[in-house]
Amino acid sequence: MAKTAAARTQRQARTSVWLQEKTPRGRGRKGDQPNGLDRDRITRATIRLLDAEGLAKFSMRRLAGELNVTAMSVYWYVDTKDDLLELALDAACGEMALPETEEATGAWQEQLRELADQYRALLIRHPWVSPLVGKFLNMGPNWLAFALAVQRAVANTGLPAHRQNGAISAVFQFVYGFGTIEAQVTARSREAGLTPDEYYEEAVEAVREGLGAHEIMESADRLMEARGGATVAEMWDRDFTTALDLLMAGIESLLRAESAR
Image 1 (cartoon, rainbow, N blue to C red):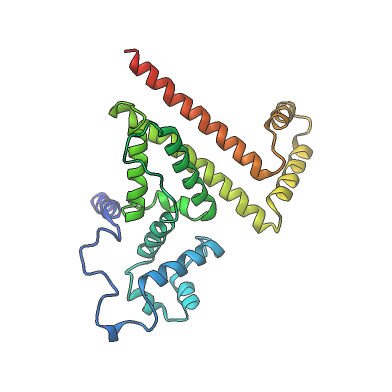
Image 2: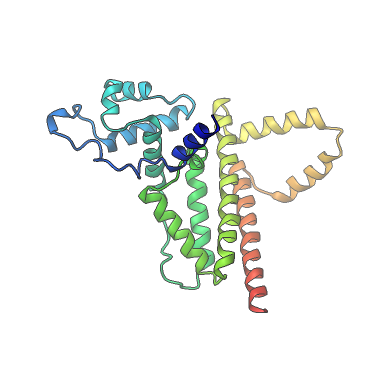
């Protein structure tokens, strides 16, 4: 039993639509192809459905209905739903505008900030991206381009190689967490039929009613007043910028420490 489970885990760890050693689907005889379909069209429809209805409600049958074809027609192009989700994940990643990082121009802070901004925007625009990022190997061309840009930007800091993975984790795991939470809060406000500002006001009121006598409220009020921002979007932006400022300062501090050795 343990051996079977281990083998299953190994298969899952090695599985990716980008690593399948077979002729790509959609390249058979023209007469075999479902009329009007191709992999790109199916992927675009998948993204639209995921944006509109979320990951939990997505199914191949629902996708086939959106395309006005049978589910078997979709399977002519992909083997599994996971293959299709992986294709959609990479296509969404391709929406990010990546800065030029190949040359070490000394502009590593601007490069990292732009990459962080693009990643955050992607996670907010497509809330289904964050739960899928950790599920797949992310070996598609767009994710590889993003990863390479990130690695080059961090290398451009001048940090020694043994420090660079930690810097990547500090910046982009922060962005992942921040963007995921922001996306979920935004989605909850939309599900409630409220704007983010309306949702925020109702949430604050509920917290005050429930915790009005708790000492944490005095500290929270002080922080919220100092935080500033006329809208929820401005509050998110200010918090994100401050956090990035702290991360950039941390990298600079580490660089100074390395230089002093």
